[in-house]
Structure formats: structure tokens, C-alpha cells
Image 1: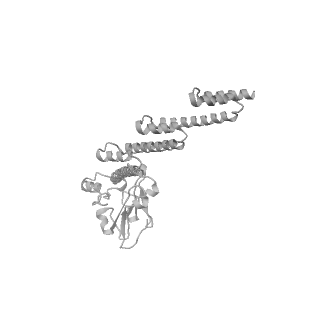
Image 2: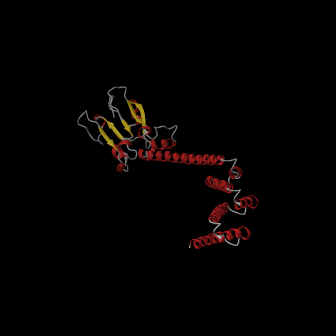
Image 3: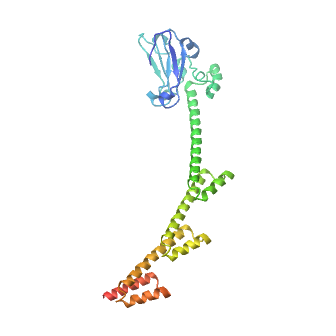
Length: 312
């Protein structure tokens, strides 16, 4: 800290929150002639007294540092034998339980009641009792102030989180409102009854989005080979009327039908490979469309046996 040798000096104890980027500190500015009532007494027109938050130096909770000249040190503090010396008393974390009175003698800090009484509820409440009883140490007041700031920040953070969740839900509801009948329904229920929590609504919205995607995927599968796949047409016909299948069952059945179609096509290809020279293949091909007595797997196995016999 710097020292001035002019009668125009200012004594500074200031709010260092912006500088320290951490817990709350304080700084108060006043003239030399205000020191008698607010802090240590000045014995020289050239002295300057400074109390600052050394958070950046201590890397811990708020402490204090007092710098002053030789002739201001009384019998309860260190004594200097040189007018050039500056003495510093720094409060560290492991010293915070010591009373300020023990280190500072009979002089008390009245910082809490002079920081910003208009905007600080804690200072307003403590300001009445401190000058009379002197019950609070500066560190206790700073800690209580810190707790108030942290509580306010936590409340604001909680409110911001709720607002963000609501906005996210609204965005999800409006993403595909025209194509998703479930989303308007959820939004309608919320405004009327407010029975869902935001988390439940988001989960339900995700489910509805997943269902809509599954329905679209199923429709796409059903329309892939509608003309050549009678099973797909049958499933597509059943779903809108009776809705007896779950989407998962329909997709599974669609996969089975696609597999069946591929097996049928493979079987037909095998049957036609050597139709002229293989009377058994013609016989199987003749039986299948009329009677369907063989399963596709049996037909393929029998075809393989036939091919094996022919080769043999």
C-alpha cells in the first residue's frame, strides 16, 4: 500500500469484491479528520491508515491488514525505532479465533456499521447494538454478510435453473407441434391443472418424441415395398383401425415380413436356377402357392437337399 505525505490524504477501506473475484471485502474512503470516530486515531497529519481485503494474498477467507507509521503504534502493539518503518498486522485463517481486541488493544473497528447501511440489512441490524455493547467482532459480521450473499446467489441460481427448464420444455413442446399431437396435450394439461412437474413433462415429451419417431419409422418401413409385400399392407391396415399392435411389435413383425419376403425371393431364385433339369424344384414351386404346406425354412432345406442330390 502507498503512503501520502500531504494534508489532503484520504483513508481507504473499500469493497474489493471486483478486485479479488472471490469473497466479499470492503473499502471505506474518508478524510483524516473522520478517523477519530470511525477507526484508529491519527497522530500526524501525514499518516494514512488502510484496511484492505488481502484475499488474493492469503488465498483463503477474508482477513485484514493494517498499515501505519511508527508514531501511531501504542503500548499494546509493536514499537518502531525508525520513522521509515511500516508495520503490518495480517489476520490469517488459523488466527481468526483470536479476539480482535487482543491484537488491536482497546481500539475497535466499527466497519460493519459504516459500510453501506442503506443497502445492507445486516449492517442496519447490527449497527444499533455494536456501538453500545460491542458484541460482534468484525470477522463475525463479515462471515454473516458472506452467508447472506451466498444464500441470495443460491436462490437466484435456483430461480434461473427453473426458468431455463421451463423455457427448454416450451421449446420442446413447440418443436413439432403440428406433427405431434401429444405435445399440445401436455401443454394444455400444464396450463389447466399444473399436475406435472417440469421434469415429468420433459420426460413425457421425450417419450412422445420417441413414439412419433417410431411411428414415422414404421410407416416408412411399411411403405418401402407395399406393392410386393402383402404382409406390410395388412399391418398398415390393422394399425389405424384397431391399434392392437404396439409399435415395437409392428416393427418386429415388419422385420419378419421383410425377412420372409427375402426368403421367398431367395427360394424362388433357387427354384428357378435349374428348373429344367430338376423336377423336384418344379414340384415344390407348384405346391407352395396353392397349398402352402411347407414352411419357407423347410422348402429351403428341401431345396438344398435336392441340389445336393442333383450334384451327387
